[in-house]
Structure formats: structure tokens, C-alpha cells
Length: 251
Image 1 (cartoon, rainbow, N blue to C red):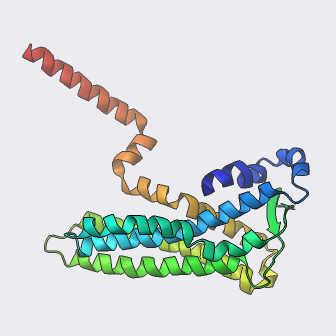
Image 2 (image 1 turned 90 degrees about the vertical axis):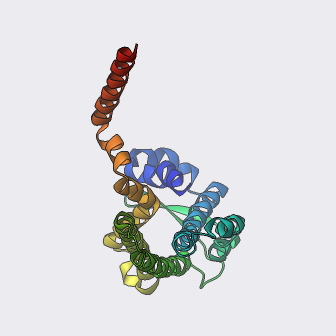
């Protein structure tokens, strides 16, 4: 959801700036569309942080208690889904109370701003809390999981390598996002900086597509099918040719 919102609204007007004079007049005044867009975008980001916590817990229990893994998660899946949907409200409740949202020109595109109903409540503050919490769970659970894998009688080095790479990549993304949000909170002079703006966009882009990147990098077959389709076509052609030849010989 967050990817779709970024592609068709946030990034679209940022990278295709000639659309701004056409679409801009529809959003110069407070609009419910802006409120829905911004709230759903922020809520999905919080939900992804909560989902990350359950993902690392799932991975850890799979290694620590493989015998009871299925039983445990058959009971926890409904609870985890409910928490992924509901826990983000703890970081977005003040956005529901916000009366007005506006768009302002920002680096060739639009940026959504809102009037705070609660002075101390800000998106940056709660995003820092959620992302740092998810980062802490990721580091702790991954360390326990990796240590348990190393202690196995038959070590699965490919799983250890994949787990290390995945945890390092995700931890870096969460740390980068949290760092940009903390800068917005703690450093007022840094807010107008184009470098902080670029770092924030880079962090959230990596946050949005990080899971897909990890999947591609860890799966050689998927990677070959995406980046080397001609090899796969040759492999399929050779396999079909061999099967046809074998069938012909049997006849």
C-alpha cells in the first residue's frame, strides 16, 4: 500500500514536475483526500515496523522450538494480524484529530503538512520510537537465532549466511530511517537541508522495497529469472528438447 501511494502521488509529482501546475489547484485548500492519503501512508509504515517484530519472532521460534513451531504460530497468527493493524494507531491517533492538511511546493513536487492538534505529538517522534523498537527486536532475535544455528550438530551455513545478510540489511534500513527522523526532532537547523530531505527519501524508499531486494539477492533462481531471462529460456528449451528426444527413443 505504501509503495502504491508513493508511486501514484508522492513520487509521481516529485519526479514528473510538469503535472504540478495541472493537479496543484485541486489541493491548495484543505482536502479529505490529503488526510486519507497521509494517514494511510503513515499507518502502513508503522504497520510494517510492527510486522518486522513478528517476522523475527517467527524466525527465532522456528529455530528454537521447531517441534512446537506450527502449534505456537497457529495460535499467534490471528493475534499478530490484529496487532499489526491496531498497534500503529498508538503512533497515528493524533493525525485523526488533525483538522487540516495542506500541500506545499517541495523540491519540484508536493509535500503534505498538517496542523498539530497536540503540540508534542509528531510523526517523526513516533516513527523514531517504532523503528528503534523494531530495530532492537531485530538485533536481539537475530542474534539468538544465529547463535542457535551455530550450535546445531549439522550447521546450515547457507542459512546462517542468508540470516546474517538479511538482518544486517534490515537493521541498516531501520537505523537509517530512525536517524533521519531523530534529526527532524532534535535539529531544527537541519530541517531545511536538502541533504536531510534526500536522506529521508532514500531511507523510506529502502524501507519500502527492502524486503523485495533481500528476496532477490538471496534467491539465485529468482535473480537469474529477472536479470538473465535468456539463460532461463535456453534452459527450458534444452529441457524440452531432451524430453522430446527421450520420448521419441522410448517409442
